[in-house]
Each structure stands twice: as C-alpha cells, then as structure tokens.
Image (tube, rainbow, N blue to C red; front, side, top):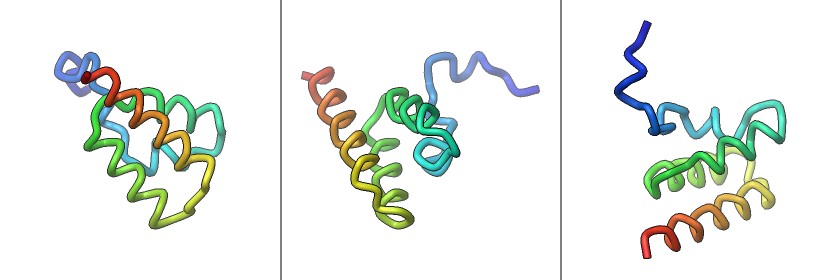
Length: 73
C-alpha cells in the first residue's frame, strides 16, 4: 500500500484524463472542483483541448481558474 500521508490534501495524483473524462458528469465536476493548483488545471485544459474540446468542460475549467486566482489574491 502507498503512504497516503504524503498527499493528505493533494489531489494532484489524478491524471487530467481521470479528472475530465470519467463516465459520469458528477465525477467530472468532482475532478474539477478538487483542482488546487494552476499546473494541474493547465494540464486538464490541454488534455480537453487535445481530445474532446467540450465547451461545457472548458467553461468549468475556466471558472475554476478564476476561483484559484481569487484565492491567491
């Protein structure tokens, strides 16, 4: 088993594919709201642009980016 103590509040273990391409929209929403850094968010945007280019998903990612920027301010 892996040591979960290393990543207690870090959800960056999920790949962009796991965040924005699960079979269920609730899981997509959960994947997006748990993005806590711009690097992960950019990777998800890049994945979405490369694979599906779904406007609704890209809009949610844009909204999450705004939230992250506001938190940093």
